[in-house]
Amino acid sequence: MKLTWMKWSALPIAVLMAGTVAVAQQQGSGSPAPAPAQSSTPAPAPSPSSTPAPKTDPSIAQRKENQQDRIGNGIKSGQLTAGETSKLESKEAAINGETKADRAANGGKLTSSEKQQINKQQNQVSKQIYQDKHNANTAHYGNNKVGQRRENQQDRIANGVKSGKLTAGETAKLENQQKGINQQVKADRSANGGKLTAGEKQQINKEQNGASKNIYNKKHNAKTQPGAKSK
Image 1 (cartoon, rainbow, N blue to C red):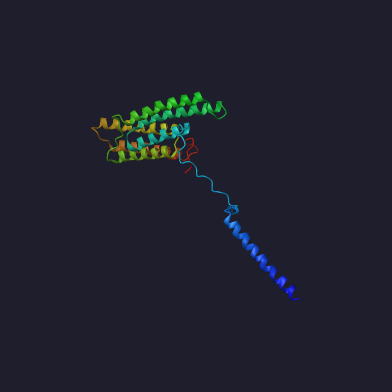
Image 2 (cartoon, rainbow, N blue to C red):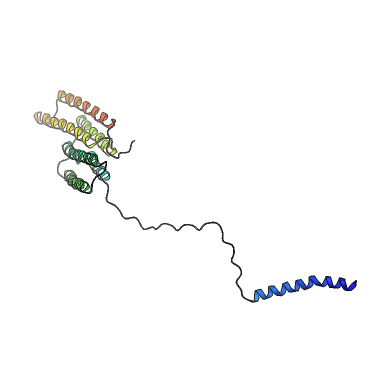
C-alpha cells in the first residue's frame, strides 16, 4: 500500500520535470517564435500623389466668362466708354449666337474645328478689349448730377455683366442707349459753352430714367449668360 502511494505521487513530479526540460530545449534551439496573428484592420491606403494634374485649356464657357469679367471691369473703371462696350458686346453676342447654332446642329456639342474657330474669334475680341481699355478714350462723368447719374448706370451695367445677369446682347443694347445719351450731352454742352440748360438736364434725366428701367428689367428677366450661377 505504501509503495503504491509513492508510485502515484512521483508521477506529477516526473511530468513537471519533463515539461521544464522541453521548454529549456526550445529556448536554446533559437527557433523563431510563432508570428502573432494579423489584425483584421485593413492597412491605410497610400496617400495620393502631390503632383498637380496638368492644366487643361479653358473651356468655351470659361473663356466667355473671362471676357465678360474683363469688359465689366473696364466699364466700372471707366477705361471702356459706352460706345466701346457696345461694340465689344455686339461681337460677343455674335460669337454666342454662332456657338448656339453650332451646338444645335451637332446634338449639343461642338466639333474640334468649331472650337478652334470660336477660340480664334475670342482671341480677336480679347485683343480689342485690351486696346480699348488702354487707348486714350475713357469715360469722363464730371462732378455733377448728370455725370454721377451716368456713372451709376455704368456701375449697374458692369455689375450685371460680372454677375452673369446681363447677356452680351442685352449689354450691347444698354450701352448703345448710354452712348446715345452721352452724345446728346456732348452736343448740348458744345452748343451752350460747356454747360447744360435746365431743360436739357431735365430731358437727359428723363432718358436716364428710361434706361434705368431697361437695366433693371434685363437684369431680372429669365436671360442670363451661359453657365451663370443663380444668385
